Amino acid sequence: MFHGLKTGFWVRATLRHLNQNGLMAALVRKGDEDAGSVFIMLNGRDGRIAILREQGATWLRQTFEDSDTESAMMQANAYLERQKRYDPDLWIMEVDVLDSTHPLEHDITTRRFSHED
Image 1 (cartoon, rainbow, N blue to C red):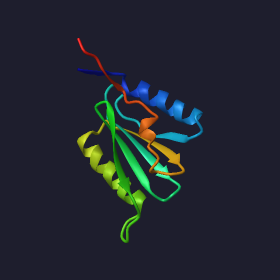
Image 2 (spheres, rainbow, N blue to C red):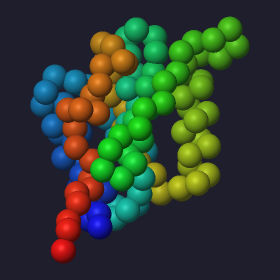
Image 3 (spheres, rainbow, N blue to C red):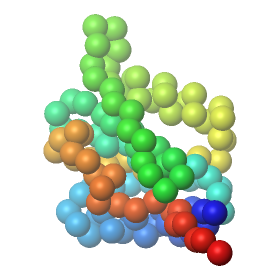
């Protein structure tokens, strides 16, 4: 069974942690304090964008690159707009990184932890 921290508490702690470790992280969209989904947009100086989505106790990564018709940012924003339809209470954090392929998800935890009875 999975248990976890309240989303608002976890987001504020994670933003503080990222900023204290030299990254520029900001809250772009505030969701439900107790249980909204969490998305982290990694805005790379390499022109690419990755979005991390919490899935249980792990992170799933979706990447976006400029194409002939749309920029990476346009694609990422469209993706997040679609996600808002599924969960209007979601949270979005944006983090500026040198390289969007860096596995930041290995450096941060999720809100969830497993507890076996």
